[in-house]
Image 1 (tube, rainbow, N blue to C red):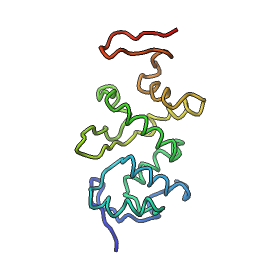
Image 2: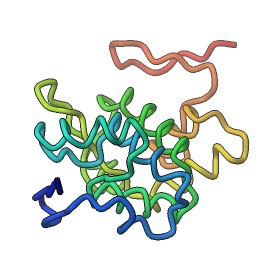
Image 3: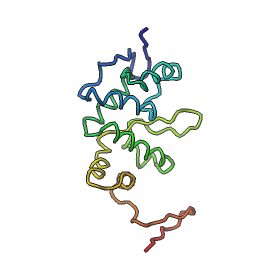
Image 4: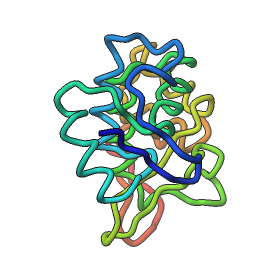
Length: 171
C-alpha cells in the first residue's frame, strides 16, 4: 500500500529514500523519529497513525516537509540530537516568545493550542548562533537565551520575579 499525504507542499508519497539529499543515511531514522516527537508539520491524525509506528521502528518514510526540515538543519551543521535538544528547550519557552521579535527564528510560528499538536519549524540559519554557542561550550539552555535576547542574555544568577520587576542578582 502506498500512502499519499496531501498538504501545503502538495502530494507526497512518503518515499523512504527520495528527498533526503545530503542527510546521512544513518541519521534519517533519527530525524524522522525526533520529528514524530516535535512536529515541523502535522500531516493529520490518519497519516500519523500510519506513519508514526513505522518511523518509530526505523522506517524513513517521512513526509516531504520533515525531510526538507532535516536537510535544511543538516546543511547548517545540526545533528538529529541537536535538533531534538533545541526544540525541547524552545518548547519549554513557548510562552516567552514574542512574534514581533522572534518570528525570524521560525519558518512556521509555534502553536500553543492545547487542543492541537504543538508544531513549529525552525529557520535553520537563524539558529546557527545557538549551535555555535553550544559547540563553544555554552550550556544549551543559556545558548537559547542568547539567541532569544539577540546576544544579551540575563546575567548569570539573575532571578526574574513573577510581577515583572527588575531582576535580582544573587551574589
